Length: 231
Image (cartoon, rainbow, N blue to C red):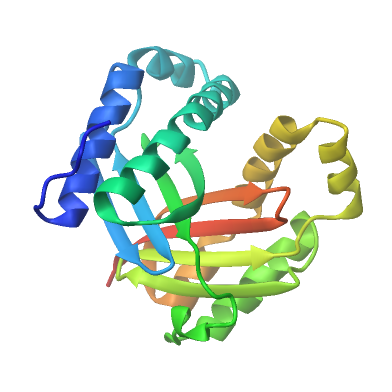
């Protein structure tokens, strides 16, 4: 495990992640952008597609790539969490990740331990209520309205939305029966298809470049990340 040097924390984390992915996939991302704003650590990957993955994507076999990456990252996440804890004093409780294979991009979202009652983590921003109302509409179609919903900008290019209590009873039963991976892949595709990007761009006043979403089915929580290009 490589110890992070005392340079810019964000650039050191970016270098560590880039090398780790290169060592395990044969090709790492050309760019890694790290944003830290409690309780989140966002790691945005650009031009991340291994040679065999490029072939599968060319054949429109996206599911095989996602299944393989899910298996790989289940192995890598414990090492990433341990490195960030020891070398950067970042105590990540859970990691979430998703990919835009056609764009050759991806996001890792680390969530630190924090007091859920502390609303200072979720400051106001223009049209926040409108944004969350639109997200509730999507959630209602895809599964159900979340019990709790909040959102925040990590910087002017990264917006995180947190949803809790969104699984239906049918989905919970499918998870209990061991259908977690297939449910995850299906929900990713469904929610991205239901998102009307133009509506969200109009509400936020930005251009949306990428959308990522992931769940922790056992905690019944989901994170959706917009990568935006500010006006």
